[in-house]
Image 1 (cartoon, one colour):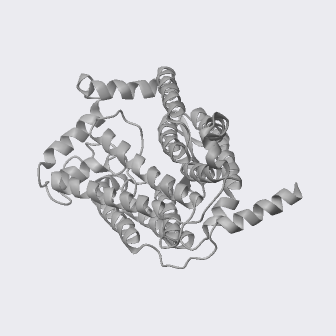
Image 2 (cartoon, rainbow, N blue to C red):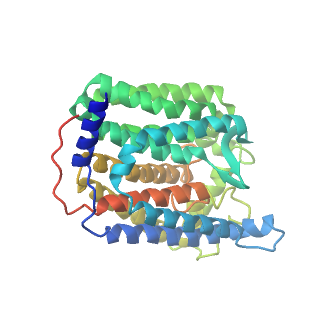
Image 3 (tube, rainbow, N blue to C red):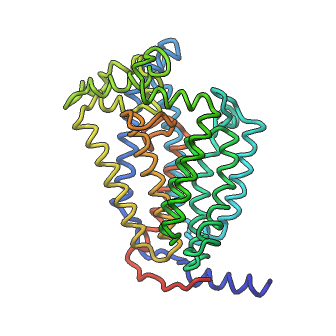
Length: 390
């Protein structure tokens, strides 16, 4: 065993790059910072009415101040992670995975319950959502498994049971927390990463069918989730309760027209649209900036995501490629799901819009993840390493 560990360590050092020979990818860094700047600007506009109401009309920047503080933490994390060698994530993937499971299980014991679900831990007055960390650690572990399995990922034992077992370690605690949105998100990201790893498409399709059955059963037992589906299909049947939020969101989008009402001039944010600064912030963007502004924001997300995938394709080794692709896919899936919910193409899932929605944990983690992509981008001009399955 000792000899195998030494051999594995030597193989790891040979295959995983040690020093960066280039600067980070400046276009990607600029796009991330631009997303953050636009997101904070729109958060202020969307939240100041709610902030004044919550503080007795004394403070209009309550939510912006908290988000700004988390943005600074996230920027520090992005800078720090952009300098950590990628091999460190490979080495400690299992450790991080274990810590995230412990955090998820601790939510069931000491977590705060909101709307019948436990998802948050309160640390010194700051709400912390362990599921945000779990998303990241799952991606890191999947990237390591992809490197370890190599060509064996095409086999059922590795490509399905190997990845599936690791995924269930995260999904089971999330199911106990009644965190359906995180289950959906992580499941979709996992499928993309398994496909990149080489898992047979027939097994992925079978897994998708099983997931669909699970969602139907889950919704049948969780009343609040069933109400969301009903509100999605027929919001007009209960405009004062279950259909209220989506109707107000559609009113905001429709009011924006082509060029919008103007920055800061939204009407729906004056306590008509619930969570206007969180899950439904894009509706306020549409109302104030119009179709042109909304398309510009979508285009900014698209360019950032495409640049992230470009970095993944030009990574120097397999682990880095899959890690970068997974982190970028997480942003892409979150963005798509949020936009679909706000426009009523999908039922409400509780998934926030990255860099825009209020939520300190998510913002800090997202920025830190982009720091890892930046670190991977340092090797974009290097010759790809020739790897063999372990």
